[in-house]
View 1 (cartoon, rainbow, N blue to C red):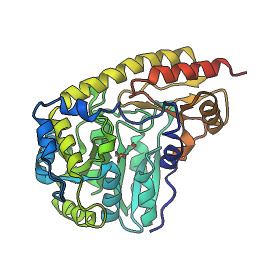
View 2 (view 1 turned 180 degrees about the vertical axis):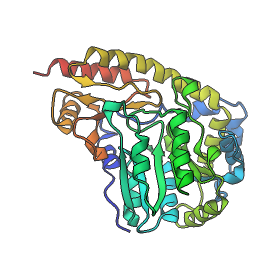
View 3 (view 1 turned 90 degrees about the vertical axis):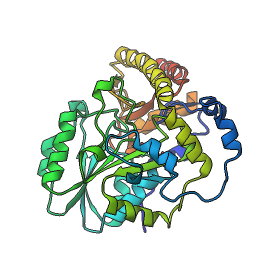
View 4 (view 1 turned 45 degrees about the vertical axis):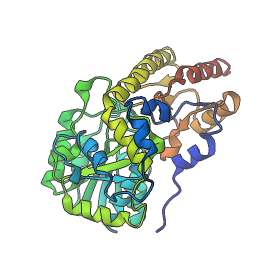
Amino acid sequence: MKIKDFKLEEYFAKYEFKASYLLCASDCESFSVEELLSLEPKSKNILKNLRLGYTESQGNLDLRVEISNLYVNMNPENIIVFSGAEEGIFIFMNVFLNKGDHVVVQYPIYQSLQSVAQSIGCEVTKWVMDEKNNWDLDLNFLQDNIKKNTKAIVINCPHNPTGYLMSTKKFNAIIEIARKNNITIFSDEVYRLLEYNGNDRLPNMCDCYDKGISLGVMSKAFGLAGLRIGWIATKDTSLLKKLMSFKNYTTICSSAPSEFFSTLALRNKDVILERNLKIIKGNMRILDAFFKKKTSQFSWVKPKAGCIAFPRIKFSEDVEEFCSDLFIKKGVLLLPGTKYDFDDKYFRIGFGRKNMPTGLKLLEGYLENLD
Ligand SMILES: Cc1ncc(COP(=O)(O)O)c(C=O)c1O
């Protein structure tokens, strides 16, 4: 298999652990082992006695029970656990798509959601979002770009990198277009549960559509990226069987400690989500005030969910140069939009981490010294 370099992940591999302030992280503040264990007094002993053998290939049953509780109509049998959301994307696309299939992909997008399809030889149509419309997806475009060979629509809401969250009406309209044309929807929902107003939360795709697939993960809303636990939920049992079969060639099963911590975290999801949303909302107030003050330098569409946004710079034509100069002078890392193969004027800013205000202050100082 030939696949393009993953620009965003390569950028992170190069800079993430060198930066003093990671101002473009896509996840929430993480937890220590001690913090997680303190959520349940008996858990320390259970962890001590945990056996470190192979685990159930579909995912530990207790974990799948907790995951299925995140949905309305899913049972543990509808869930397959993966090593992060990334493995779920890779395996789904390899199992479901064939050379010559047509796929419509929301754009910009986390790269693997289109690159894996391209590597298989699919024809990919980018469903491009436009800042001028507050990043809102245009349904007419989708309707006009359905072809006889369209096999899947790939969406991601809440969205990386814009923080865009479509309306439930639009979500249902996408399902109707897919249903009429017998198309599968792969819905990347890794930022779900991070809506600032709970009324804006979309339903899960797998609960609403027989050919709907929901992708979830511990990394983003729960702040536990290092566990590398993700999953796919779907009513399509024949697809689940094929995913399981392919997984025997990738990771076979997950790590027992990761499954243990994920189950513990999901049992205590309300506490974890409340803590993470508190950080995000506090940071968002600071960030919103910052961008409202800096309208001559930036254009800003305030997100409705998630912990990342995608502002545009007005003071330079070269966002890579801006990000690189900021990193060299202040040790603050932003992610240029070019890493999404998007426009060269946008950058991703992350606000799920506690130290976001300090990184932002350094950015402010940098801007004051610009000529
Ligand atoms: C939209 C989206 N999907 C999937 C992933 C992959 O998640 P993980 O790294 O936890 O496997 C990411 C990671 O940034 C993401 O932003």
